Image 1 (cartoon, rainbow, N blue to C red):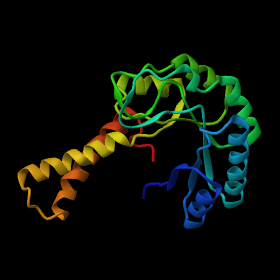
Image 2 (image 1 turned 60 degrees about the horizontal axis):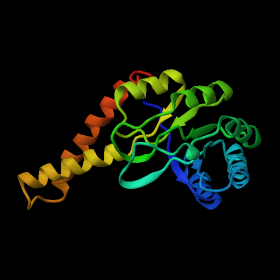
Image 3 (image 1 turned 135 degrees about the vertical axis):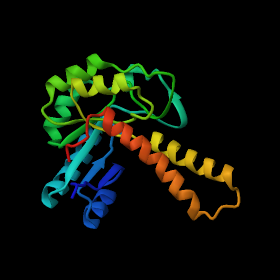
Length: 210
């Protein structure tokens, strides 16, 4: 009874997005953020056309949200952040439905409190009329998450924090019984993940909005 979206995160090619759409995904992301601007535009345009023909939502990324295994720097270089005027040009040229931006955020677990550029976020929000996506929200304190939403973030991606919760549940189960049936490790792991999800639903103000 709860609406659900099946989303491909960080698709890297037209072929991958096509496969997801054919498999029944209701939303796909095409991530051309590592490519030059015009190449990112051209790639996104093609996937937007695919989505339009299939009734599938399309997300893209502009600016570079850094990614790392383990911990990532809390101080992201300004040159990797999304330029407001480029965001306007990108959306106008691609007609993409949602846009992930870089404003000091990174994928992974931060070494300290990240320095999010809220002024940049506010400027981009004022220039665009589509939903803006916040990638790399694992470990972001409640105050900064709520401030981001207050400025105009519509979608928040949290992955690393859920992985860490799952792993913690497995470790605790193994500590109690290191010869446990592997199936017995999953319930504690899922319980830990559920705790995090419930807390994020509270913080993000998503409860009761299905």
